[in-house]
Image 1 (cartoon, rainbow, N blue to C red):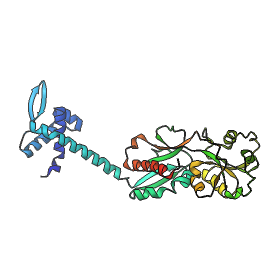
Image 2 (cartoon, helix red, strand yellow; image 1 turned 45 degrees about the horizontal axis):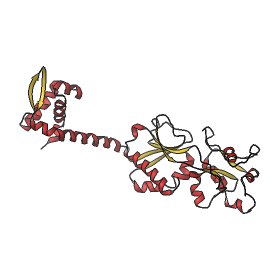
Image 3 (cartoon, rainbow, N blue to C red; image 1 turned 30 degrees about the vertical axis):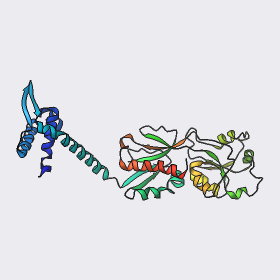
Image 4 (tube, one colour; image 1 turned 135 degrees about the horizontal axis):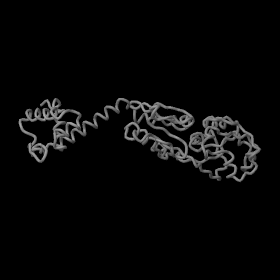
Length: 307
C-alpha cells in the first residue's frame, strides 16, 4: 500500500467529515471546494468504497459511512502524531545547543563547577553560556533559559525560585591566626572590608551597612574598604587575604567547603530578600532541551546541598 501518496486525500476526508461539508473543509484547508471533493473521490476510488452518505438538509451535508466513522479516530490520532513529529523535527534543528544566560559570577562560582554533570546526562546538548551583568532580551538574543538574581519578577519571562541565600562575612584562614583579631562584629570596623558593587542598582542587594546594622554595630559610617563590581572577584580578594568580604552563601559555598574561606560570626543570621530564579519565555516552556536543563538545575541544587 502506498498510503503516503494519499495523505492530502486523508486530510481532505477528515476535514470534510469534521465539518460535514466540502466548502467548510476547503476554507479550513485553504483550497477550493472542488479540490476537496476531488481528493475525497480519489480516496474513495482507491479504497473501492464510498466514505460519505450524500444527503440534504437545507444545504448539502456530508454524513460519513459506518466504516468511515470507525476509521476516523485512528486517522485523527495519526495526524496528531504526525504534527507532533514535525514539531519535534523543527525543535531538533536546534536541539544540539541550549543558550543559557547567567551572570559572570554565577557562572564562575556555581554553574561551571557543576556543568559536567549536565553534559554527562545529556551528551547531545551543548551548552552555550551568555554571561552578562545586565539583563538580556531573551527573544532578541535567542536565549533559551537563564538564572537571574532578584525579586522574581521580570516582564515577559516565567520565573521559578531556585535558591535562597544567606549573607555573612568571610575571610581567608590566614587572617584568623591571631585569635584575638576577630572575636566580635565590632572588630570588623578595624578591618579592610571588601564591598560587592555588582548590583548596586537592585533594591535589597545585601550590603555591609545592612549586615552590620543586623549585627548591632552602630559605628558603620567611618568604614573604609575595597570596592569591586564582580561577586566572584570579591570572594577571590578575600581568599587572597585582601580583607573581609560580605559573602552570598550560594557564591561562597564551594570556597567554604574547600577551606579557602572561613565564615565569621555564624550565630548572626541574615537572609537576603533576593533569590536565584530560573527564567524562560512562556512560549518556550515546552522545549525538551529547556526542560532537561531546568530539571537538572533543580536536581543539582538538591544534591549539592547549596540551597
